[in-house]
Image (cartoon, rainbow, N blue to C red; front, side, top):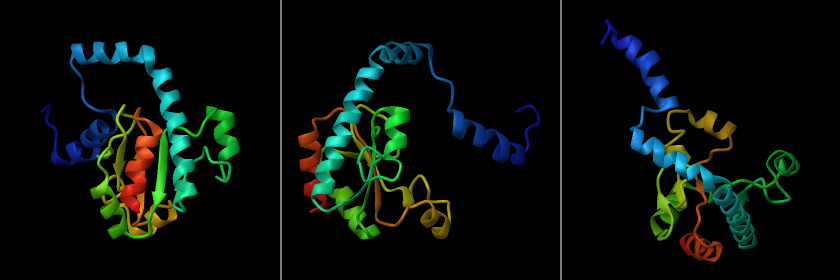
Length: 169
C-alpha cells in the first residue's frame, strides 16, 4: 500500500478513517442528500421529544443531564446557540450494574453507540465510546459507571418515557 508501514497505518490512516469515515456508494450518497430536505423537521421533532422525555425522567427522580432543562448549567447558552436542548440526553443511574440492567430492559430503545438516528438509541459510554480513557479521565468528563447516553429519535415521547421509566424502575 504505497510503502505504508504498520506505524503509518496505526497512527495516520486509522485515526483519519475513524474520524472521517469511509467513502460511501453513489446511491447511498443520493439517499442521504434526499434525506437532508427533511433534516430540520426531524431534528426539531426529536429535540421536542427529548425535552419532554428529560422532563418526565427528571420528574421521576432520575439524574438527567440535558441542556434543555432550566436547571442545566449551560441552559441559557444552549437556548441562545441552538434554540433547544438538542436530541441527546444523559442519565446517571449510579452504577454500571444499574445502567446495564436498564439498557437490557429497554424494549423500544436500541443499544448502539451511534448518534442521530431516526430511532432512539442508548449506549453506555464508559464501556463503549470512552472505554479507552482512564477512569479518572472519564470522571473528569462526567462519565461515571452509571451514565447512559440517549440519542432521542422520532418515537412518541410518551412511548419512550414508558420504556425508559419501566427499564430504570
